[in-house]
Image (cartoon, rainbow, N blue to C red; front, side):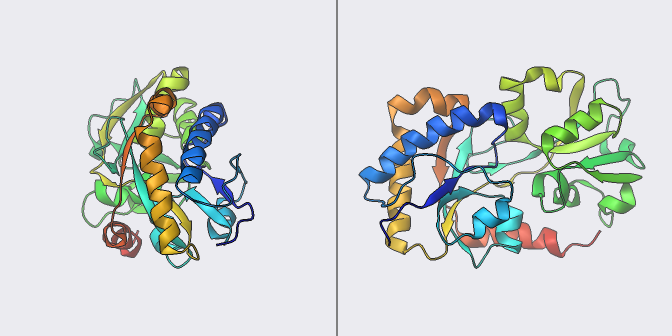
Length: 265
């Protein structure tokens, strides 16, 4: 493995307001990675507009992606390192869920009440914002047959804003994003409520470039677990709701996310 600097990015819970805390977490994690013998560890995270370009870059030392693109777009281009745990409602160890968010004054009491409603989604490559509906809607129903209108917003945060503005009636939001928004920007959730929560699925994994040798993947894991146990990083972990990590088999992701890709709308 070259000793020249490589790049790292943790974009999945990377709202601008959270980024200083994410960078502090990375600074502590980077210190432990170096202590475990990982070479070329960058001091600063990269925040590119094009996440796929970053994920596919052979210089990726450590990144974070979603299970759906991992399985359906990136399987040959990255290796799994570990799946972080988050202490957020809807999480269970390395698994997470999506909350269905509607306006507080909406009369809906069940998912059935949303038939024909307007849906906002962050993007069609998102499990928690789009494909999760295949686990929520009645058998045989698809997003575009159940809802009256489906509009892409580009982010969970924008989807919530669309619901609040009356531009949509509902959205599905990653439960960790929802918890972090509640912690950091609670006013943006005021006027909304959670209608229901999806079944859990494997969470958003840390990955490295496919070319990373297996020995270095082990060092990345060692550094990650050391950082998760470091008392000096407790406050930043709590601020980001990080509570641990697990090493899941790639098959767990394939079983969860190939099935949702194969299901039709």
